[in-house]
Image (cartoon, rainbow, N blue to C red; front, side, top):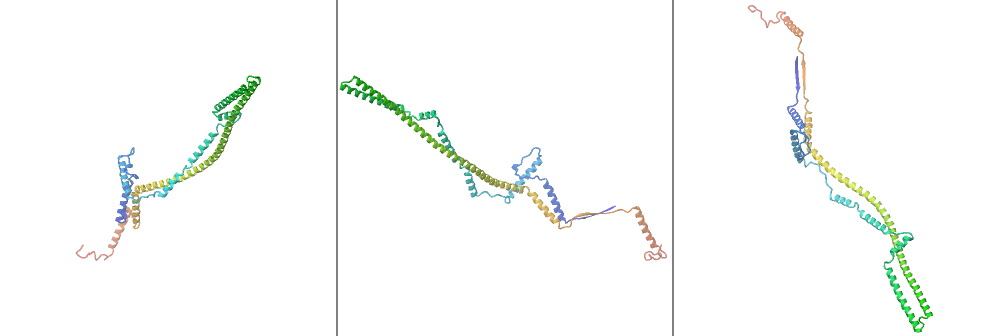
Length: 344
């Protein structure tokens, strides 16, 4: 059986480019993808020395490409001075209400302390008045009564001198006069003492009432402070909510800024890591476009079966019959075969 093969090949330079592309693709498939420098590469457990060396070489090439692509690496603009100033002012206002709230709370505590100890009822009233009595009252009363007794004695002695001058000293009427004088002096002394005690008690009661009034004023102030504290609490809640919202917004801005920087760094690392594959893909697309302008290569095979013995015999017979017919006609080959006298 005869086999005939026909191949249609592209131009030689196209075939050479295709072979080079296949060689590069095969070589690139064995290179590990690394997105860090040589300092970030360490041999992992179970990793062979050859694989580790390949990753180290890939890391060195990554650093070289990253340095070469520095001018194309994406960057993120930082915050300008006005943005930084605005953020500083915004954070300074957070919690600024706290000192005023603390002062109001301290004032309310002082008012509550001042109201403490105010008693109710007769026994409590007596105890409160006793607390307001002058600690020098007994000394004052004793000194006053002593002076009264001294004056009484002087007056009694003057009365006796008058009776002696009249010659009635020791008489009945003189004794009655002295007795009446002593009774009146004792009565005046008791009234004086009672007046002094009443005066001291009245002053103490007045001081107690003034203290109650003062504490009542403090209570009113405490009520006002309580209302003020309630308002401050509401303001604090509102201010806290505002602070939380403000800090959340600032945090979101800072997070977006940081994320943009991370994205730029990741994009720069991706460019450096996949630059060989991107160059190879670009080269492959160019080769594909170039090959599209030329006829496609291919191989065509034509199979011719060998003749059978019968076909061979029939073919030989046909040939011999044709030759025999040609010899059987007189003069057919006279120009070629000469059978004249003397030739055999």
